[in-house]
Length: 349
Image (cartoon, rainbow, N blue to C red):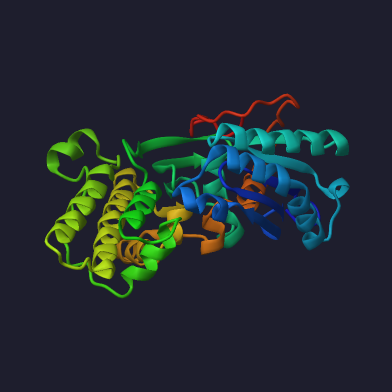
C-alpha cells in the first residue's frame, strides 16, 4: 500500500492520567501530543480518578489542536478516529470517548473504540513496521501485566497469563514509596538501581514448580512488594541506613527476571519467533537488556518501542485504528460505550 492510500487516522487516549492525541498514516507517526496530570496526583501517591477526569476535560481541545498542527492536517483530512474505549478509569474513559464521538460527528468520520492493551501492541508497528503474526506480547504497566499470543491483531488476541494481584507497575510505585522515591515509581527506581547492585535475594513470585503447574504464565508481585517492605522495616528497626540503590536494583532484578523468563518461555512453548514488549514498564532499562539477552540466547526476535511510545499515548491508539481500517474492520456505532473492564479478547468495543 502506498503512502498516498494508507489510512490517516487520529487516535485519542484517556484511560488514566495522560491525555494523548496521535496521528498516523499507515505505520508512519505524524504527531504524538500528550498532556499529563501526573504532577497533580503525586502528592496522593497514586492516580485520583476524579482529578484525572477533570484534567482530561481541560486538556482535550488544546492537545487535539497541537496534534493537528504538528501533523499539518485538519480534522477534515483524517480517514477515521480511534479512541480508547477500555480498560481504564471509568470517568477518564468517558471523557475521551465523548470527545471522539463529538469530533467524529462534527467531521462526519467513522469511529473505532479500541482496546487499550491491544493498542500497546500495535504501537510497535510505528517503530518496526508490520507485526509478524503470530507473536507473543508481554504488556507491563501500572494496571496490567499480561502475556498474550497475537495471531491476528485485528481479530483478537489469546491471553496466556496475567497478574493475579499487583501489576508490575503498581509494585514499582509501592516500592518507590517505601524507599522515599517520587511517584510514579518506575523511572526513579530505574535510576537508583544503576548506582546499586542486585545483592538482595528477593523472591520471584509464581516460579516454584508447584506454582508453574497451575500458573505457568501468570504473574504475582504482591509477595515481592511485601518482602521489600519487611526488609526495609528490619533495617530501620535496627537503626541501620537503608541502601536505596541496592534495594532498588534487587527489586527491579526480581521483577524483570520473572517477566522476561516467562515471556521467553511462552515464545518457546508456542513456537513463536517474535516477542513484543509494551506498556509503561517496557521503558525500564533492565527489562530491555535482560529480554534482549534471553531472546538472543534462543533466537527470538525482540521488538520494544522507544520509551516514549511505551507509556500511554494517542499514537498507539491511532496505530491500532490504522491497522483496523487497513484490515477492513467495521467501524463502531456513534453510541459505542466505554468499558472500564474491557477484556483483552475484545480488540474493539
